[in-house]
Image (tube, rainbow, N blue to C red; front, side, top):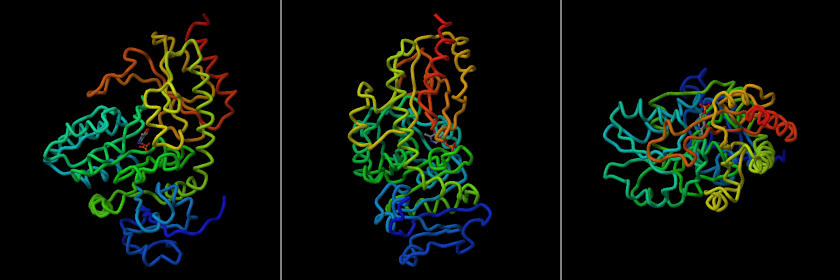
Length: 385
Ligand SMILES: Cc1ncc(COP(=O)(O)O)c(C=O)c1O
């Protein structure tokens, strides 16, 4: 890795072992901007000196901005992040808008926790763009996005949504786990708080659970207050693994991207496959928006199968050798999970309702081996016919 200029790191790593910020820090950031940095950061229980390009990648911004503008919180895992991210920005009596295609546990958190606390939640169509204006109410306080959408990969017009949000002083939060800051720069597109399941590509080896939140200057103060009040924190081992993962994030992603696109094109031509849901395919409905706003694609996409018999699908998946059956993508291994989003979407109907879909994560294995594994799986799916 090139050793670039050192940047002051707007990273707050909250360590469970040290508690919430009682300690001034283990291994504080050691560069010329440390003093300025400490003014801008808080709850420092572990900091690190990282090369500017790595920091820039982590923050989704350029290295200069990384030094002056943004901050990152690391909570223990998605639930901590869920809590911090929304509770810092909304309270009882507020209305929030959440994309219909969000990660399912985000929806569960909204329905089961936020609604119980008196926060009104509305779900919106990921293709809504500037039309989100019509859903705003006098007490709308926050819009929560995830692009591309979980499992079905709808690409949102984030700049259009950001313009509407900014005009009304509404917070815009975005789950950017799929693209990572390498392939989508949330702050350049008007997002106030960028959220990552660091568990996925940042850690990169499926061996730690970590969440990362980055805020622009406008939102940093509120995020800080909410985070202090809630006190979720990450363990030092997870923080270490996250920092280590950041150093190879870009090279891993380039490989995930290339392999996934090759697999997607191959799958699109398979007779067993009705459709491939991958934003980088020109035939995908959100492709133009993806090309406009993203600079790459990662290893996660879905296929829609023609075969509808459950036992055939089970035979296909149970016999896979390289693709594990697992949810937590972003590591070096390939994964497959079947899904049917019709069960839990409320504002939209999935385009391929009634069909079995499989979400694939393309890991770092040889593409030829992955094709052979799926090819054998397709034979089990069709009964060898
Ligand atoms: C888009 C997205 N966001 C967040 C998460 C939650 O990640 P974690 O495993 O850290 O709880 C996931 C997990 O699958 C995800 O797919």
